[in-house]
Every structure is written in C-alpha cells, then in structure tokens.
Amino acid sequence: MSKENSEDKMKQRSPPRPFPYHTLEEALAVAKALQEKNAGKPWKPILLANALGIKSGSTNFRDITSSSNKYGLTVGTWQSDFITLTLIGASIAKPTKAEKEIKDRQEAVLKIELFNKIFDYYRDSKLPSINDKFFKNMVETEFGVPPELVEECIRMLIENGKFSNILRELQGSLCVIFSETPPELEGLPSSTEGAEEGEEYHPEAPQAVSTQSTSSISSESKPDFCYSWKEQSSTRSIKENFR
Image (cartoon, rainbow, N blue to C red; front, side):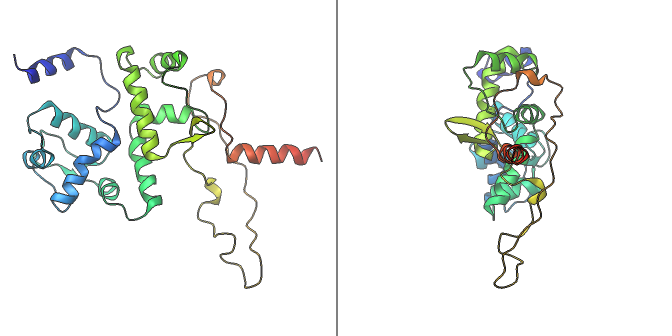
C-alpha cells in the first residue's frame, strides 16, 4: 500500500476536523501562485499544483487547496475544473495598504467558525497558554474539538492570531484585540483634520458600546481582561463619579 493511500485511510478513520490543515500564511501560497504566476486568472488544478511544486493528486495538494478555500482565498478544490482567486485572496496576496491587509487577514481567519468563536470568547482578554490544561479542556469540551486535535488547534489559533494581528503581546501575554479604534470613532477625522486654521478640533464624546458576548459559554471561566480602550474609558468614568 502506498504512503498516500495509507494517509487517506487514516483520514477516513479520524474524527471530523473543524479547522483547516494549514495556517492562513501557509494557505496563501495558493493565492500568491494564482496572482503571481497566472495574473490572477482561474487556473486548472494540475497547472496550479505544478506552480506550487506539488503533485496534483497528492494529499498535500488536496489539503492546501481545501485550506485556501475555507479561508475564502480561492474558490474550487483539487477536484474542480478551475481554481479561482477571490477578491479577498487577491487583496491579501498583493496588498496595497497595510491597514487593508490586516483587515483582510482577520476576515479570512474569522471565516473559520471555530476560530471565530474562540477569539470572540476571549475578546479583549488574555489568551491562555497552549500548556494551560484548563484551556485545553475548554477547547475540547466547550468548543467541540476532538481531544487528539486540541494542541494542533491551539497552535494554529495562535499562529493565525499573530499573522492577522488579532493577537497582540501586551506585558508578556497574548491578548485578543480586534481593533485599536472604537467602532464609533472609525472614519472620524484626526485631531486636526476638519478644524479651521488656528482652531483645535474637538470630536464628540463617544457613546457607550455594548461588549456583551454572543457566546453561550459561561462568563465565569473567562480570564483577566487586557487593559484595552474599553477599560480605560470605564476607569475614567468611575473616577469622574467620585469627584
């Protein structure tokens, strides 16, 4: 029995996999090959595989095209007539603005429902270490990841989080922070833009933003919050009430 057939049979016996086989950065190889070697046009899988240096019938090619498809970078898999680059895939493969690149990477990562749920649960909080047994238990029991895939899932979660800038290192800990700018302030001019010459611009005070999580998981197990914009605003409010 060939090694490839053996791998296929092992996959058939393994439990359902709720996340891709590759990180977003790895899956980008497919989008970049389409963009750089075929001018962003749809390509036959056999030609795409050749451009990637992979056999078109191999497990590696099946997995990486599947991962690229799940992240929303491409449409089609190894069995399709053509594999097509999506708008977000083209944007990430050949970015024109740093802010847009980060936003697109985050959108691609969050297309994976499992990653979306975990990141949303730990939003503005510290993400536990991969060695934290309680975190491993949470990923298995609350998020439904098979026990044999838990560590791989957490490793990929962390790699994708760093690559998309969803995870930031603050005071020695990785924190889940989707945006540094409060939603109600996005798009407003800078501190000087829009002001008359010689005058100082004063934007309106932001309204309160609901931070209630949509997760059904008990909030009792949530970790310490990172010191985010929301906490700074809350602290200022409390101090003002005691003046």
